[in-house]
Structures are given as structure tokens and as C-alpha cells.
Image (cartoon, rainbow, N blue to C red):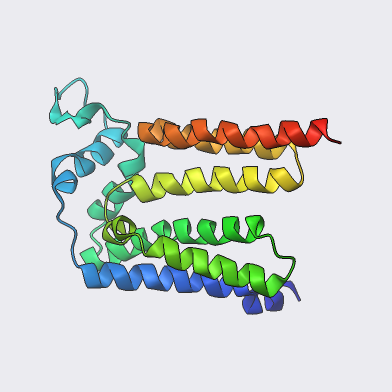
Length: 209
């Protein structure tokens, strides 16, 4: 059955391992008390759900005018009354999606036709991604880098799949994801612009048909 195939699939094992690793890393790192968290992350999430511009002027400095919506999950968890470790573990599980997407991209771009080798390459890609000290430090934290990076990787995954089988829907959805990532965190626009280079592959493929 479909459920049995899902349970025994390597993909599910990788996803669960990524989530578990993120939670363990979050537990070992301890409670996040970074400067940005105290200075504006909580306020940004609060201001996204309440009209603050009529009352506040630079309440959190220039960051008061950053796009606040990416901080809403952190704000809701902080106000939920959950223990700090549980709240950050939930964030860590959400952020582990960046490792899931890394695995999927590696499997898609793998040159080998062997499923075993593609899976092995995906696992190695996840291990290399997790070795990034900035990623480890931000797991379970209020920083928006990892969550918005998930939107970027999801867009790139759609583009990578579209190289093999071009389709308008995949390209449009990739553009929407990359656009959303750029809107939530402007520095992501670098990855959105660089994706234009990948579109050249579609043009070459269409011309050589």
C-alpha cells in the first residue's frame, strides 16, 4: 500500500533523521538569547499582528520597518506559554526543512542513474549542509535566515526539476517562492536573481530540440 511504501522509503528516514538532528542540536545549544532576538524579533512578530505604526516610532530602531511577517511563528510560540525548550524544538523541526530540501535537490541533480547512489549523494549533501556552523547556531532560534532559505531552496528545487521536464507551472511557482523569500528578507534577492542563469538552460534545451 501507499502507507507502507511511505514508511519504508529512504526519503522518510532522511526527513526524520534531519528533524531529530535539528532538535538535538537545539537542545545542546540551549536557550537562545541573541541580541537580535531581544532587540527586534519579538517586536516584529508582535507588530505584524497589531497596528503599531500609529503608536510607535522606531520602537526597535530601523528594524521596526523590516518585513515583520516571517517573525510571526516565533512571536506566537513565545506567547503560547509553552516551555522554552518545546517552543524552540518546534522551530527547529520547521527549520530542518532546509535539510530536507537540500536532500531533494541533491537527488534531482545527481548524475547517476542508480537510486542507491542518488540517495547516498543526497545524504552526503545533507551532512555537508548541516556542517555549516551558522545553520547549527540558528536552529531553534528566532532568526529568519533558515526559514526564508527554505523558500529559496524550494524555488531552486522546482527549477532543477524543470530542467529535466520543462513546465510553465514549475517555473511560475519557483518565481513566486523566490519572490516571497526576497520580500521577507531582501538579501534573498541575490538567489532570486542568480536563478535567472538557470533559466538559460531552458532556452538552450528548447532551441536544441
